[in-house]
Length: 177
Image (cartoon, rainbow, N blue to C red):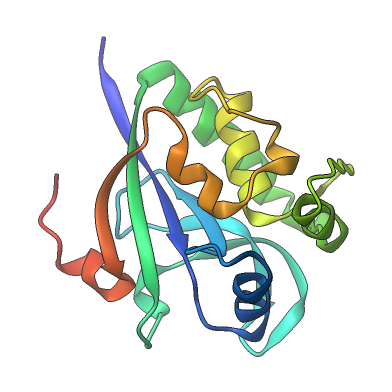
C-alpha cells in the first residue's frame, strides 16, 4: 500500500499572543499547523489574518518562507495511507474554500488552558484544528479530545516523527527526507 507524508509544524513565533501563551503554559511551542505538500509547501492553521493584528483570526494558509526572524520550531512528519491523505486533502480544501465562515476560538483556547472542553461550530484554535483534522480523517488516535490538545501535546502523538528541531529558517535548508 502506498504511503504519503504529511507535516505538522509547531512554532513559538514571539508575537504578543504567543508570548502570553508561553508565559501561561511554559510550553515550548504555542502554535500548530499542518502541511500536505512538503516542508516548504503551504501549511494551514487557525491564526491571525493580518500581520499586525491578532484579530480577526481564522483559517489561514501559512508560508514558512515569510518568517524573517528566529522562530523556534519542531517539524514532524507523519506517514499516512493514500486514502487517509486524500481524505485530509479533501477536508482541508473544503474548509479552506469556505474559510470566511471559520473563526479562531479564543474561548476554546482559554477553556483548553483550564482543561475544559469547549466545542463551537466553525470555531477552532490552532492545535484543535490540526488534531481534529488528523483524527477525523483517521490519521492518528489522540490521547485526549482535540478541544483539550495544546500545540506541545502534539509532540507526544503516536506516529509523529520529528525531522527538524531548531529555527524555522532551518527547515528550508534541510535535505529532503
